[in-house]
Amino acid sequence: MAVGGRAGGGHRRRRVPAGAFPPGLSDLGPIENPLGLPALAPLLEVVNAAARLIVVVLYLAAAGSLLVRLRRSRGWSASSSSGSPTPASC
Image (cartoon, rainbow, N blue to C red; front, side, top):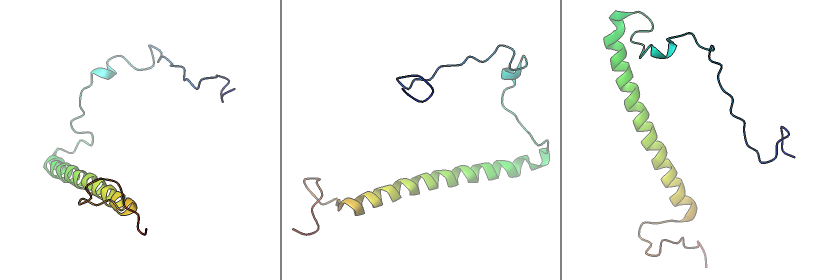
């Protein structure tokens, strides 16, 4: 028998009660200035743009790192015509 007393490992869906959230909470829209500091808006826009750029660069670096690890671990080379790794010693 599976953990929790159910065979098959499925999860039961639970419904959120109708009164769980105050009325109109989902109609708020985007929060424009949560800190209430309008003078910092231009600076925060620059910080946000820089952070997005850094995240994109880090994603590309992570993908490149995975490709380098794959190439080194399998002996995979771009010049290989068959695509299969060659053993280090025969």
